[in-house]
Image 1: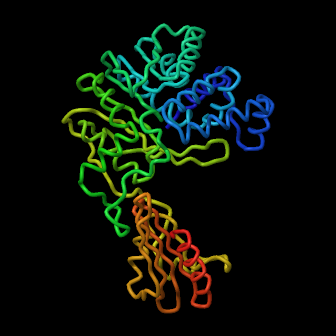
Image 2 (image 1 turned 180 degrees about the horizontal axis):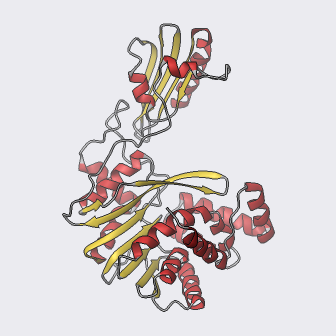
Image 3 (image 1 turned 120 degrees about the horizontal axis):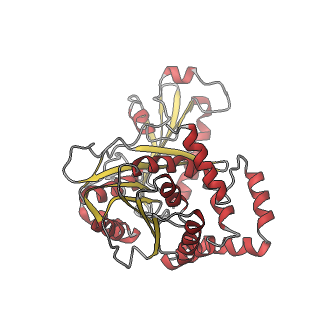
Length: 393
């Protein structure tokens, strides 16, 4: 839990950086248009697209642009809730360390907050964006932080130096958001095979392996890590955790999924990892789907339906698989299983059970969907089934 005094310190810190919290998209974008010219917005949009589709040089160019004093308060205000969710957790663990490395520190907003909280601890922030590091150094001087140093270096191409008993990396190890991750054995299961080749491929194409190895080299014996990446999807979480386990890291506490808002958009992120390297007693790695908001199909769930325009039952969560498996009297009317170009295996199935018809979809990247309607509305599922098939071919 975040106490009120810590929350107020963090909000004061974010305000000092020029960040503002917005609860509505219209208010945020109105402020953005006040701060940016049409040319600024056009340039930003171009760099965002290049960052999404380009290589590491395009990514660095985006963050160099984002570090401009006119731009960063507006862009990073979208991450206001992110800082409220993460900064207090990181700060709490900094008190247990002596030397702290923030890998991929960006402008140093999080790093400078922790360094201010713990003036007797030694902090180093590294990032490959030279413009971000320039801003971070300037701001640290303005804050009078003598226990904080920033270095510009690329963790993909350069080796880190030093020895730290706490390494922090938040949204810095696995930025390849377009990469779907590691597929399951088949559409029927969430389990991944033990083969090493797919895991190695994932670590190489995302750069995760290089960055992790670099961090492990500077982690002191018995040192600990705080990691927070975009790995909420099981297909990304499993290979991420296997990469950690292969390097001798294990959780010290249960993994914490984090939910925050980017203005109005809900972001389900994380999990938040608190790790230690070594053979100490820890928590076992878990490769099962996390609990979701779906419900089993039963007469009780049908009775709870209040909108006659909606299906009797609808589940778009991983738990839809368990609900589908509970339909023991189902009769399959049509089904298709396809292997797509990206390696994703997709299964689509339309069937019936006494009084009802259902449509079930599953793939090897953990997406599940089950829809059940009355027999009188079976035609809508037939149309839906054909639409999905057209999208597969």
